[in-house]
Length: 141
Length: 147
View 1: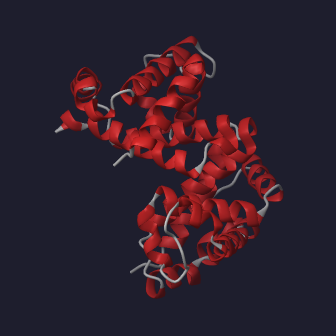
View 2: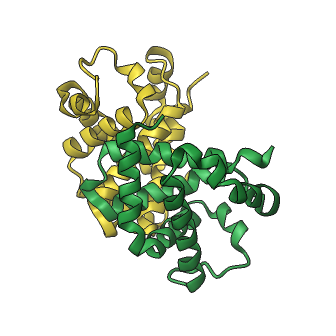
């Protein structure tokens, strides 16, 4: 359960980091691909080498989806409906991978924000990313 | 037997050599208790854990965090035999402390995040890989004697 304060914190962070959406998203993806090589299997059609255009554009796409979702967390099921269908029926990504990406996104935010990535912010972000992942995986079965 | 490349050994040694055990130990354990509140179940005798602020100021938690980091140090000094190094500790966590071994992974993740925040951009992708490999061996060794 996210408190009102946590929801505001989350919106603030995603909004503040939107100018560097592509960099943050790409770094999270790169950390995931390198730490958990099995995750690369879903991206054989893209060039996911560091700093590639594909990586930056895909990173940005994911970041903006996360930012958008944060604006109305109570209605994630509605906001994410198209993405749910896409991930379940077309991409068919093993849902356990969402957790791996979430972890790498959190590590990326920690590197970027240093001390400002406080335990309270970490907790809020972890809860948000778990909720997002859960909704994204809803239609899998 | 876990194989370590020279580069992995160098990365892990370097992280430890720049580590303030008290600061990082305290921050990691506090973060784990705050982010994953169910882990507080193992710390009933540690005083006030009412909210994030009290956890962060709790001296018993701080001391325990330091103890954990010094425990991790043993893995650094015995990288080629982590499994046996932690056999006794694993039994302790299983038989006496009754800790769900999945929680070791949570603490490891929090430690990673604290170190990442400390090192910033120096916590490169390659650093993360080597560090996480090290922690996963530790976590596995700690869960090994559960029966």
